[in-house]
Image (cartoon, rainbow, N blue to C red; front, side, top):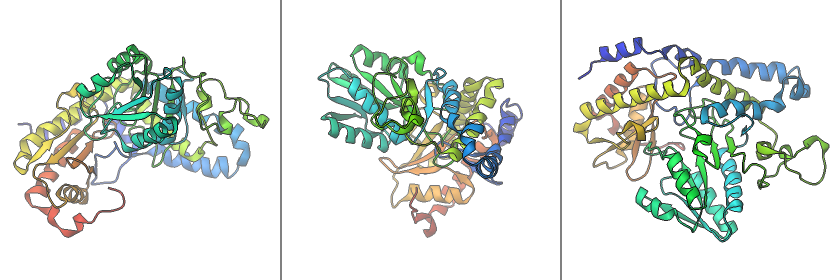
Length: 422
């Protein structure tokens, strides 16, 4: 069995270790929740100050031109494109994941073969995706059907399917869906795909063009480190981009927004998927977050980050198996690295009385921050962000969890009081 010294040795020889200097991280904290909210880049503080004090405070409205505010959605979109296998001018940053999903799913519904009325998604897809699909299904007279297993999905890819809507990396288990294979199967059936990249953009290599996908959306505040509520992004395959007026036809999606005409004419390509005025301060910090990932290019980019991510999560799984099995802790994420995103989810066998939630709260009180996800089973969820997480921290996180369980610290009443956000 490896010792903590072995993990320290891995840190000393980690070619990516210098990238941690890009982030503000509190002392005595092991942050394993970058899959919910990425850590703050150091540059975000100065960039925010610059936008607020200089560009807004001094430049005022002139900064839309002088500081190039108006270009932020497409400029940052081009940077994100390099992380998700898209081309220049194909990604735009705008709105939230939910709104962007509404736009692209609406487009997919309109472009689907006539007479097809079936949207298919995973029952464990993130709820906002399902809610948006439910809403659009009602509006357009479609049916939303959910699957639980790969076998069920295979049966649903048929000549009744209009759109397959999937999150590439399952938010609960971390299971990776095979984008290329599934997209090919859906296209062979004459249907379209919509991919949610919230748990894959910045976490695993993504190749939208290589997979010949149709539409994709993703958020900016998880692995892209853009800050709480950071704007999301949207991608449309160029072959579809000019075929449909997305339903949220706001003024900045117009071909000439400052002509102020009364009729809507969509901008060419991806720019039509912009809706309202860009949130400049949030976009500025998102660009800092995306730049932390681009800084890894000199070390091998997303391939190198993915390699370290899997080393971290595999080491975590091995330690959990060795140290925590006696407490009924079980790994709920794929053990095959090729099928696992950048997270590991754990359950507690025979859990009762809110034990899993309380265990996470007791762990957070020790400075090890993960998160809890209710369901069947309830989960302790841990994200492994290779930009700022080290191997010795993985060792320490499991040791803290061992002590929480061995000493039954989670039984304290304060750990059972649930906040508004879990």
